[in-house]
Amino acid sequence: MAGKVRGFSLIEVLIVIIILSILMWIAFGPLRNQILRSKLHEAVNTFVADLNEMKRRSLTENASYGIDIAGSNFYHTFIDRDGDCTKDSGEVVGNVSLPSGITFSTSNTTQTIVWTRKGVPLNSTCGFYSGNITFTTLGFTKTVIISRYGRIRIE
Image (cartoon, rainbow, N blue to C red; front, side, top):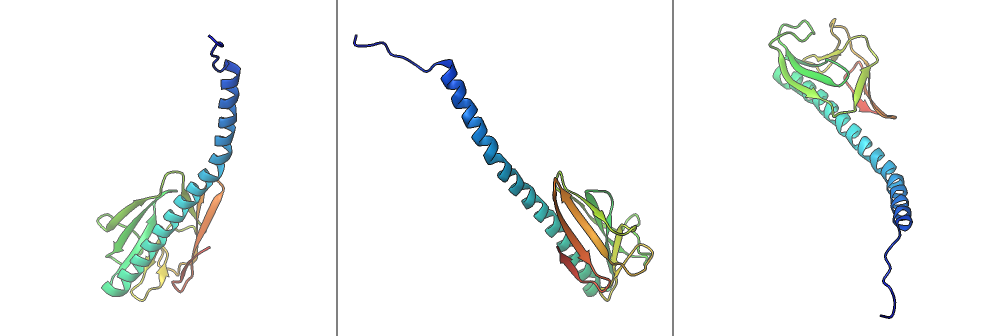
């Protein structure tokens, strides 16, 4: 035999594993941030689409529709049949949960937005609504701004 076949030592294998672990850790940060931004973007777009749908229904169906923010990551869409600007039992059209890890908060004390038949947003006391809804996830935020004239925009 010309020579003895040698394998890798335990130290060499551990060094390779440590180097690969460090490289994976470095690559995971930007990937995680991109996933979080994507989830946040999806949640905001879903909420704005629901706002626009409730506004559209109010204009076309001659009835008041709204959104009631039920918690930090859950809201209801509803039809306001009795005109009291609040969600009552039997008026719920849909229930929406935000993706895990995303929460929202409002700048107003009221958690309800009701669209009139003319496309004007009202609060739960039937006064004009204008305010911000801020979506948050681990350092990233997006804000939905609703003007008292019914304009919806994202910042």
